[in-house]
Amino acid sequence: MVTHALTAQHIDIAEAFIRLYVFLTQYIDSCESGTVNQDYPAAELQKNLASARAEMLNILTANPVVKGKVEKECEQVFSLVTRTLMGGAEKVSARDALGAQRVIFQTKTVALSDLLAVYRAF
Image 1: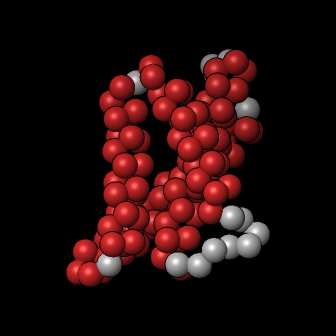
Image 2: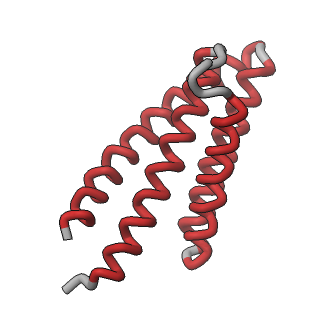
Image 3: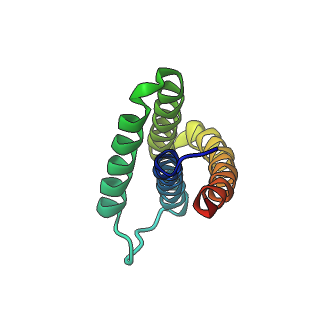
């Protein structure tokens, strides 16, 4: 049987993952659109993304394998965004890779949201 403390901890972890993937997706969107969103300025997005990333990596200190995967995902997105800003042939391939990464993050977010709903039902 699942204890309430364990369920609360699982909820916190799932929420942190969702937050990180939502901010990474928004970061990709802001790069792809090339425009500044007046309702959500780039500085605020970067601050929230850095906070969500730090929180997630802190949570994952107990599991270095998953922590490494999350760090790799974040670094990959940051690298691809940098490549899109450089222009040239790299820009096109980087945008394609960002689009694929966006789909991955959306899929993970949907799956985690469903899992979170199950955890909250306990």
